[in-house]
Image 1 (spheres, rainbow, N blue to C red):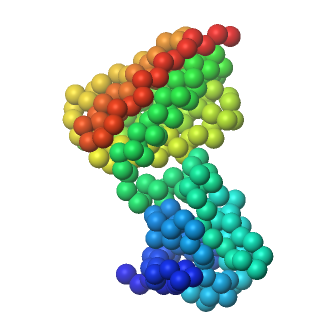
Image 2 (image 1 turned 90 degrees about the vertical axis):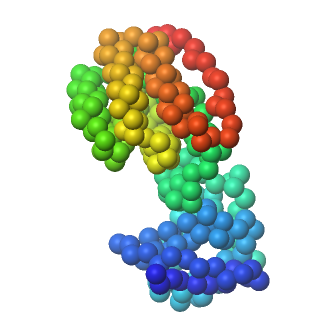
Length: 263
């Protein structure tokens, strides 16, 4: 594979994958972003000059500037006049950002990362299911059952099951009618992809059947407008997912409870 190489200040040479993308902005964004998240460009590293980056990536200064602005908005880099541009500490990164999550997953889903994803799912998704039970429209029930059916038909098809499961959970967020709930969609999709990459329900017929029943319980509770039942069913599904994955995990999942949701 050909590559784009550059130096970061006095640091060692960094090799970035050369990616085909639809725009020059994407080329720089993905190249630098993935290098930062993967650790190839470590925290505190100074980026090369804009002239050098433009030359190495083969893009205009305008495209480079736009990409750097995007990376800055994601919290990955910061810049000061007469000092330059450097990689920020992870505490500044927007971990809800879809690109950062994707780059982090591409780096490799270590157990701590996946555990963090499951814990944040426990904090949000049961509440989203409960709210969805109070606010859902008929169209949401139709869509949820369609995704549920797709899960049932994806026996042995890991990608098909993953796509249907992700769509199901995103639909629950949408049914809540809460834009803040919708904003965690990328995080949930990443959590499911990370866990399924190692141990998907489709790897075992019994587990696949259990996952189907648990998701059916979620949609039935939302359809019946029973918020507590919806929250409980969602929490059970999340914990079952963790149980499947946890044979490879190095720490237990925090035991969170779900409080009753009242109108």
